[in-house]
Length: 636
Image (tube, rainbow, N blue to C red; front, side):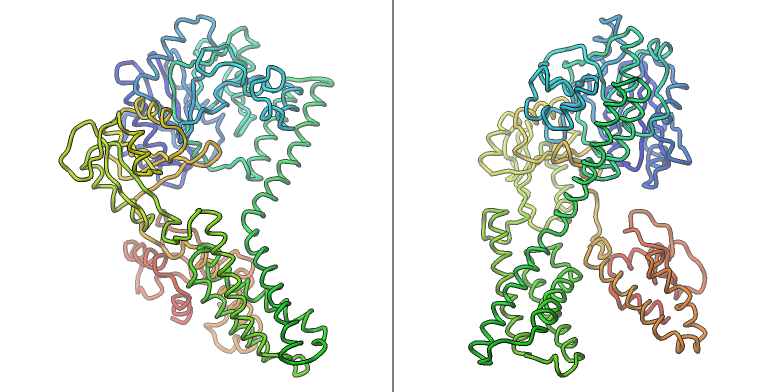
């Protein structure tokens, strides 16, 4: 057996399917065994592999045992002269394995080998070749000198930026996304260190390979696509914690004395710095617009108050409570209603914005009416404030739209001009699929070397760059049924990252792509629009849960009178804590928006359990969710 390909999967079913299809194409003319180790995925990955790829050697773990342990499980059972550790969110070209194995055979001292990797936009991934993270190299990376001077032999050692990516080189560290290993090398230096749960295991094994007298190589003669579709993100606190913990393990294992202490100091400093950056970045992304609009609303009301005092009421000033109580709660109520009504999810939906402000105004008037008489200052400021706030926010969001999209045509904000590199029949299949994700999708046409009389045929592949320019295309979809992976990557590299790229695997009804090397891969499949997938409906459901639970607790004496209401009281605390929701799903149907266990379930009207009915009820509940459905379930 020449090659064993090992893929560890965790909840990336569609990426795995595309990866396996490319692997089977690349192993057509060689003796190879293919292994998938699934770490207890819940997205149907195991069932997909069993159904579509019965030839695969499948190991289905009952727990997530980590990357190292999972790979070792398959390595111990595989038979290949070479072992390839491959990420599931990758695509390999048809001749990839032949080229890299020929190179490996020509280098008797080769212990491990990596290749030229590009992201979903065709951009070179610098982690394709890396240097050993010594304390000095780690310091330069942490303070950003490697980014400022990427080609420097002193500061750019982490990604070896001074080495030409188009030439073969000896390197220190290989990437676990594509890591070819000689079996005899593994027999000598050992398998992956299972102390590393995720991240760092590739660095550790690469280092042990060189310490064992072997060499690691970067091979530029072939390319692969690495979508980076894994679930952890570089700006998440979880990534920071797991990655840098792995670096500490590496330092404790391989460094000693002052080097170990210095390295651990850098690592621990980086943990806190990156964690703080991750938290700050996420907070800014999520809340910057509400904060800006809070200031706009408050300042608008403050100016209105000053005008009202001077020109309407003819008084010197309102009591201080106008400034300390009224204006702050007016502002807060409008922010809350906009948030829960989904105005920040669709910031350029002006009808939703105006509706949110109107609902907020009604809430403000109700609160105003409940205040003591000595705090009743002016309903006029509320009414005219509603108009003023509406006008200010409409102008602000129009300006924001113009800055973001460089146009005042609001129909263009999600405008996507797409072409397919593939046959007309495939293009017709994906039109409805793409429209379901974006109502402003424009399917311009298809590009194929087979001339067609269809009005949608735009030309052949050699004219692709010109077609993109003429039609202002911002999305190109490659059909694997019509164009090889190698040709796809060549075109991506030639055109560059000015457009978004997607691929449609052969015999599949989904589209996969990625917009940057730091972003997770994107998946588009057949879609049913579900209300519970939208933040505004999830916020409404959570608000209903909280308010109802509070009402039940406040009205506890009355609730105890009614036997059925005792169930509400006993579960109110769990609902308040977020451990439960009042109404949840009746089945375990996959791909529905996640909900906490329900006190009541959607099948409350069924006389006896029926799995099919329960699944249909759950789907209808998620698709058409409204608060009234929860009320009916609780009272039913």
